[in-house]
Image (cartoon, rainbow, N blue to C red; front, side):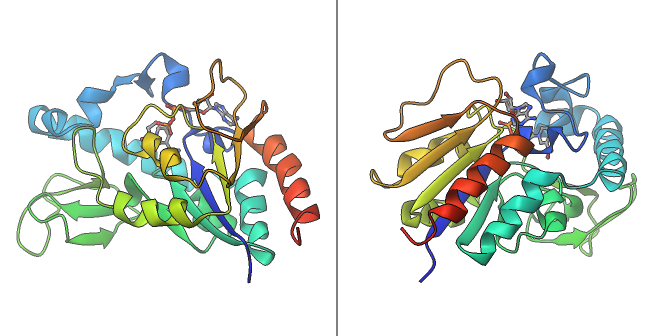
Length: 231
Ligand code: NAD
């Protein structure tokens, strides 16, 4: 049976694909305050601003490509049972070839009803004022905003509990509940953290740190894991 790997990714894994991270830009997301564009109050205050913001992010995404880190994680599936748990709303893990992906914070290429969160639609185009769900309410980005529940955490916890190896890549580990996931890992699980700018590490037993950006850090780690696959 293949060993199980849980990979927890954040905005840093997509930085080398040309998508800006959030906290590297002084806590602004593409020059916007997070509460203006990624919160229910921002939506209530200025719906057009929120739609424009995500329409721009969606257009930008369609011009970005998965980088070597996304692609190598998909290749790990040849030897390991890999599940990606991502905080990212981009689809670069999918396009990189990974097959098991949990999007904790939603997906940019989907729209959802602002009335019924179960009504979700594939939506690769702009969401416009007046685009409605089948129940007649305005569509909004299918993104989990700050202050909203993260239902997919229920799918992610058992994956971490069960994993033999945990890999954390490019996340500031400050957004909860995602940041708390590491605490569900088995004591004996092998744990790796890849990030080029970490000043302090989370207090997790057996954590090994690769002080590098995602593309080269994942390349290094995948070589180690491929060599160790039968251990
Ligand atoms: P964050 O912006 O808070 O932290 C980014 C982390 O990535 C930092 O630790 C930084 O040191 C690291 N990093 C920067 N460049 C890197 C590189 N080349 N390789 C590896 N690591 C690198 O990101 P977060 O923890 O994911 O939290 C931000 C929130 O904003 C998330 O909820 C996410 O949904 C959202 N967001 C998503 C995207 C996306 O989908 N690509 C982009 C920006 C923000």
